[in-house]
Amino acid sequence: MDASFAMLVASNESQTTASNETASTTTLIESLGPVYLNSGIFIAVLSIVATFGNGLLLLAIWKDPYRTFRVPPTVLVTGLAVADFLTGFLVGPAIAYVRIAPQSERHTKRFTVVGKAGKTLSFLTMNASYFVLLFLTWNQFAAVRFPHQHRNFISNRKVTVCVVGIWLYAISFSLLPFCGIDPEIVNKLDFYMHTTVFIVLLVIAYLCLFFAFQNQVHRITLATTQHSVHGANHARRQGLGFTRSRKRSERQFTILTLVLVSFIIICTLPSLILQLLTIYWTPTSFEEKRSILIALEVCSDVLFLKFALDPFIYCWRLASYRKALKSVLMFGRVSVVRENPFSFTKTAQPRRGMANCVMPLSSGRRESYMMSIQQGSATGRYDDQGENESHSAIITSLRAARL
Image (cartoon, rainbow, N blue to C red):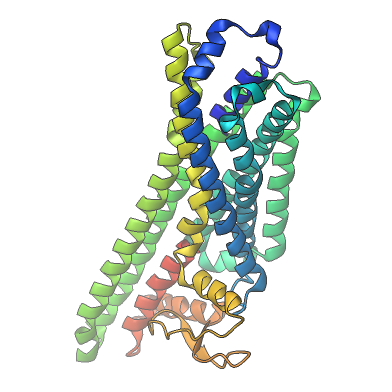
């Protein structure tokens, strides 16, 4: 995935033998010294953020103080966090070392070993991260579009097999250069099979997720309209409040979808375009080579943002993960504020003396809400809580899309 790192290592490997080093190449590398230094420092900082952000996320999931993470999507989140953690813990320092190392260090065996190891690990962890994220997004779509079938078909075991398969594939692909295959061919395969396919399928997944949510909202709106027609004045008085809540949920979901799509495109698209350029165009002049290397450095830094910000974009923005981590760090002495009454939560007596711990209702209770809406739409019969149930169904779809 990281084409700039691969090219930088390749350019430095060509200089390990002094007899093959030309004056123009030496001048080019030396002219980019400040660029490499700033880029290396930036990658080092992002590595620290990625390591701690994903490490704490894995700790919260492992401890699971509220027993809320024992669901199939958590397996995908764990696979994503492991990939991002290894990227920050292993790949990031290797990239930073290759870029910060002085010119005299570039001819040593240690530099070559670190460069090759970092390149191999980048194929492994970055591809695993992207493909787990792709499966996670399609899982969110299935949860919104087919909630009942999703609950019956998706299990922890099936998702675990899927994640293990992704990691085995990523390991196999990262070992291709050691099987005698030309590294240039491996880079092209990585570009077409991974980078291009990933970004296309991910954008399609988010579009499907958005339209699936809109379809759910439309169905529930029709059910609520029938309720208002057949109901009493009490239902009509609640209509305005439900409409506001529905519009707020739609707006939140739209903003969330746009943020996630923009985040992936901003981090991945520049590297994709530049990698495509380097495959079909070879710079000839000194200025062209210098410009392309600078562009590769910038795109690589932007790409690495994805692995540092993943835990914050997908997990730490959600209260359940923050509360779990806070409980772990404070050894369970955490009081959780009661949530919105429409958020499918109930107050339960917590363990180890905790008070006001918010525990989620069972998924069966959530399904009963959706079934009541569907049955009411078919028969025209609703009780006085139909509005609240419709609102709750929208919140359920929104939460399914948000993990």
